[in-house]
Length: 304
Image (cartoon, rainbow, N blue to C red):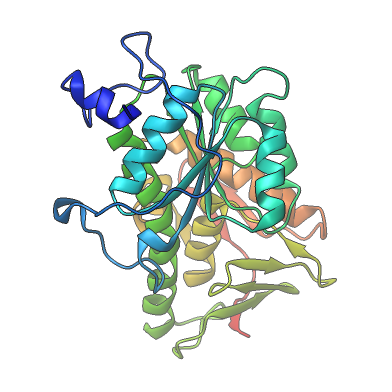
């Protein structure tokens, strides 16, 4: 009997909590790509950045075999390509074969913990999106994960349906960022920091280049600088409307973040990380704090 069937036996096919101490399904871990099951019509979702969400490659990393199997089967049953591994070492082996688009990463694993795995991932300039999955619910744990480059943070116990929603949200925001740039580039903007009205997808400022289609940032010396989803969304807003004061609420709204991670504290964390990355190559002030009001992007921005 599969983990999903066991969950269904208990009458909890979609609301069973992952990481809880109640009746937990157990079964062999899934270590390879899971086969597709029919996606529910109730869970149809729009194309993301020109590609169906179902084409995104998802890897779950958790040392609990029952949780791995349950979550993997649930995601596959809802149209995603999902597979699971049991450790950071197994994840590196998996990524060595082929890349993935998003990782659901358990924070508390024996041996190498999730934060160590996250550090390794974020040293790679083309790392996939990461959703941390942890029983630790304090703000400190959440902020540490965000500081290290996580795109979202989900606490245990949590239902497979919430994990699915978070995955779709992270993937959707990537597409929303491109749509936002298209809209901004078509708007007529005035002043020295004006962005041309052409449908530009590459922008230059203070020697830097932001390629919004590829979601990559290049330093003045040509080095590619990795951006997390949150950092990209903020920089996206800034280059769309440079030399304009943006409040935290404004940046949350414009970045398309409506989930529980869209908080003022999260904005501040992402601004801090973005500043560190920019200042590592140049001491010119790019993001200025306007006390009591928010932030302003100082450079002139042009279509590259």
